[in-house]
Image 1 (cartoon, rainbow, N blue to C red):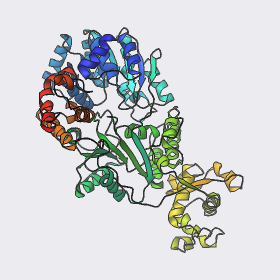
Image 2 (image 1 turned 90 degrees about the vertical axis):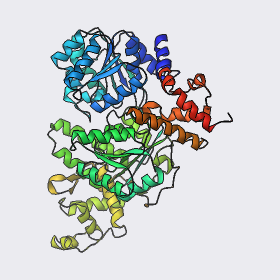
Image 3 (image 1 turned 180 degrees about the horizontal axis):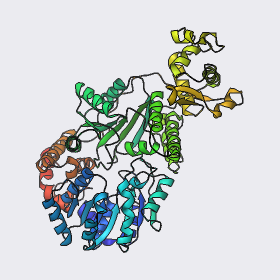
Image 4 (image 1 turned 60 degrees about the vertical axis):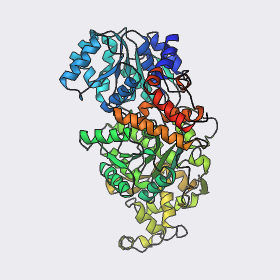
Length: 600
């Protein structure tokens, strides 16, 4: 561990390990296997990078995305680590050169895609090589219950058979107990030490609101709270990503679309811009984001509700990897639920899989509708408890108002029953409010005892009631009958007067309070020096064709602003400034600091 700590300080520029990094690294250096669950931004990569540098041989990292490999290799090379990758982006001559470096012992880390690893030629190459460890990144991809399933990951149990003496470490940020069991079983890691670092991301503020005018709600959020910030906006459909990205550009924002339907060159170009330029907004489907190592994503916005809590956690976790304040903002409505259930109904999965997906969607709905602390509910879903409300989610900052909805709920359920469980929410609301529409008159629903009994509530309030009844499983939406509402068994006690129900009172659509322009910037920082350091970083990044954060993270630049180092010795004490970066960039950054702090 002495050598590991020396490597951490000299190569990566950090003073100490964060628990449980030290325990994980000690296990792998000692030749043991490990299954690691650590939140995004928690420092998972160091858990295999440092053992790979300390143990003899080359560490082999199985990674699911080409862009992720290239990004990580660029960052490692900046630190002086001999890293490379083997994937389909290389031509035969380039691949041959990497293979020669591997056989000659000239690589510390090699990144490989899972489909390549399973090829006999690749296995034969690795069998001729001294391997220090195998790291399986994004290990949740092995789970068929998970949200990012990759069939190629199912073959990775072969590592234990072909290389029984080489330690393996599997890592992920998102896995409930069932998924962890599946990862261990499918990767033959039953005997591995398990390290669960916890799921809490206290720097992320979780906020969920009702959808009423999605584009304007998004625009207000971006302009009021995140002008000039980088972030991700998630949408359910490919078409919607393109429409929203185009519309944001029309509003003067720098936005790009990303989805699986775009050609590979366009996706790569858009991803490169997002990583390398500052203030770019990526509007994307779930095809974007896994392994994106951009630390300064200040917000993740959802214009549609994700279908599982795992997806929501994974996607929101891409914000604030640098530990600075970040927003997870989402708007949703009953239409989202209908759309997601439609997608599930048409999927080709087994009945068991569909039931599991339905359960997960209900859990996601529950998170949206909850009136208590969202972070407590989110952590509880993953089997972790938080003793006190977090104080950094919307329900903590502005507690939800509730009301006794028993009478309204009974009216709603009764109206669904008396209209034959054949009609959608809008028609049932017309019946309750006494609307004499053509459809109401056509079906003689103006003659029903429920006609007009709910006039005291407007259509918006009734939509809220129906949304919450669906969310709580008292009503369901029959997708085969064009969204018809149907009663569920669970509604019987309420209808019979044996139970009451408290409903959330939807807040008025008020404009949120304007926040600081840059949520991540300390109030007492020297703005002129900060901008000058960022400009120096941008120039160096542009010259080398790498993202700015690969040079230095925002947090490192902020520390420079406060500590005002005068020489290389003092600059080397700044967190994130390792020996290699000190040699490469020390003079330029010290010059900028001296120009802006001459009296120091």
